[in-house]
Image 1 (cartoon, rainbow, N blue to C red):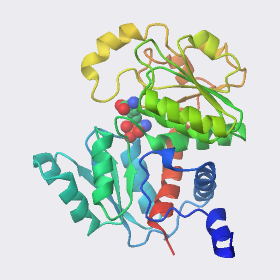
Image 2 (image 1 turned 120 degrees about the horizontal axis):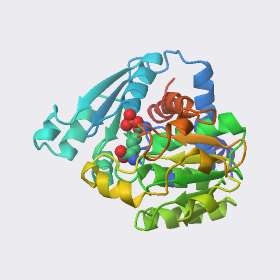
Image 3 (image 1 turned 60 degrees about the vertical axis):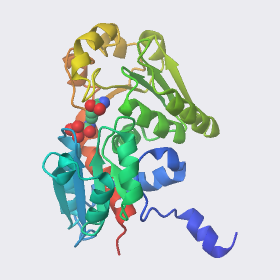
Length: 318
Ligand code: CP
Ligand code: NVA
């Protein structure tokens, strides 16, 4: 390896890259982003994004993603545009390709929250600026980066920790599986039968975990799975777009609630995480989410710090 190759491999460059899923990235890429996020949490204000604009297209509701990206850009001297898909021409049938090309002429990056990973990929292929996944049907990568950042803050390490996700094998679970695997964690996804994670994402995560001495497993037994857990995580049982399945899911997820009795079966110093928004007394009791083991608001704040790191990395700054 010559000197230039050594420098390139020691300091991976993100400039211009899309962040659609962490499957395309390495442990050292994630470590670099986590270190950058730590620095930004300690030094929030700068002019590093001066003159830069982020377009944020939302096809679904949002509190955290919208506000944390917008405030994050402002804190770095940049600007963010909130574009509700209903209000822009995409909502009247303008193609994703045309939207991607037009926006690329105005802005420095695009964040897209969409109903479909395929649409996200199309936008990324057609745009000449980086595209960041702000949640799709399969992944929620910004959330997962904030999750491991929070775990690292609270536990001081990631490697070898046991993370148990109890609930629906959804977008949040999938991204957590990928990052846990990359960071050498032991992850168990506990779901009712029929709500397991996507088999392709599971297989890919298991291959990555194997390379990092970690593991990703699926279980249907919450009480057995949480034994020895350092982190217990859950998300809503019906995601955005699944509102009409709400009643059926409440029945199917009976026995999969994170309550104090389940928390008490994990390690004594286990923490509780939830991406939010939460439905108290469904997937988690108020006692747990509002109790001393919960770190959900620290986790929500951390969305902003890690996303600032992502923005600096993919947009680049001088
Ligand atoms: N966790 C999360 O993405 O929250 P929002 O839907 O409020 O953005
Ligand atoms: N799984 C949830 C996450 C919300 C942040 C959803 O997709 O609605």
